[in-house]
Structure formats: structure tokens, C-alpha cells
Length: 173
Image: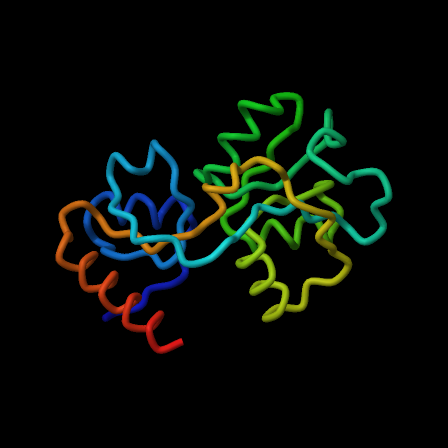
């Protein structure tokens, strides 16, 4: 197994579609993605959350951001959903979650939206002051919040091995 890092979300998806990456460990399951992905069974709930500056007293939900700026990762499903459901929110594309959170900290945008798991990880491992999670974005259906490992359709054997490994781990607990 070779681990890679340093790519934007859009770049990772392009590499995945080209077959240069074979597994991505966490991914929201939706109908569009099922066209080119084999998903394992879900293993965690990972809601999309709204992050604002600690000084914020106004923005508690996406509805509150009408006419305001939100940082979103380019190519992310969240960006597409927000564009469709909240066209009045100005999207500011960012390369990754760290960049989005930093934009909130620096007050370049009013908010950032991303999965709680990755937002928490970035905040735990980087010094990004003055940001807080204000709540769930409410964008995803509960069934979509469950993350799965995914593999390109051409690597069915890999999928079967991951499922077998997961079942073995579940039996141990």
C-alpha cells in the first residue's frame, strides 16, 4: 500500500477516476458516485457541519448566510448541494479543509462547511484559532452521512478484501 497526500479534493477525485488511486478511506455515498464507485458498507456517521468565527453571533445555519461568503472545497459534493439549495450564498473555493478553516479564522469568509471528522482532525493537528462548529448543515440525509471506503469499479477484488477485513474487525469487538 502506498499512501498519498497533498492533493486537493478535486485532484484526488480526478486521480481516482483515472485509476491512479484505488482506494479512498472515507466518502459520502450518493447516487451520482455509485456510477463510478464501489462502496463498502458504512462504518461511521460523519455529518457535514458549519464552522464560523468565534466572534460570530449571527450565523447558526446556512439560511443565515444569504448574501454572505462560505468557503467550500472545489469539486466537493457539499459545494454542489449548497449551489443548488442556497444560490444566494457566495461560494469561495478553497483547495482543502485547512485553507477553508483558515479563511474563517482570518475573517475572509463568514463560514466553512465540511465533514465533522475531517474538520475535527484538521483543528486537532493545526493551529487555527478563533473558529467554532455551530452545527449540522442539514444538507445530507442521514443515510448519506454514513461514510464508506470506496474503490474504483475495476478493483472489485480489492473491495471484497476490504469487506472481509471489516467483518473480521467487527467480530473482534
